Image 1 (tube, rainbow, N blue to C red):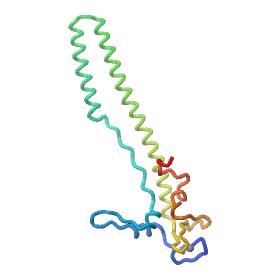
Image 2 (image 1 turned 90 degrees about the horizontal axis):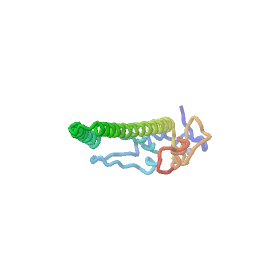
Image 3 (image 1 turned 45 degrees about the horizontal axis):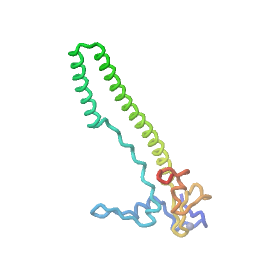
Image 4 (image 1 turned 90 degrees about the vertical axis):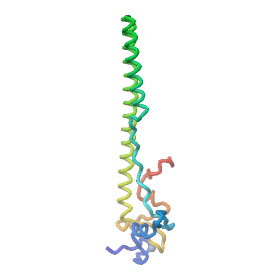
Length: 175
Ligand SMILES: [Zn+2]
């Protein structure tokens, strides 16, 4: 397929943007990546970051261990004292502690779940935008980005993100 510029149908100086970015991006021997200004403008924004998994962690285990030791000690003391009331009170206390711990863990779970759902949405939007991006061309003569399948729409390299993703959702810090 011959790709022509939407401005006046010329074929020269029209290139697919993925190759402009590839050729305009060089990593030197120290691993430092240098990009031409055009390659930078035409690059896909980086994919969204995966949420960190919240593990129970050392502190969580330490807490549980501490509770365990404390409760064994408490029960022993209270059983020794021979008072049923004290025993019942300690069991209630323990049950409350366990309940609190369950609550903490389940809240953490639900936070994790909502974070991973949000990530899935962002990732999907990024994948869709990336699929569009791969089809785009750039005219060096007119300085415009366009999709050869739809010559009615084109954009300036600086508004590329809006062009491939409506609404733009990658940069959450802009909200
Ligand atoms: Zn042109």
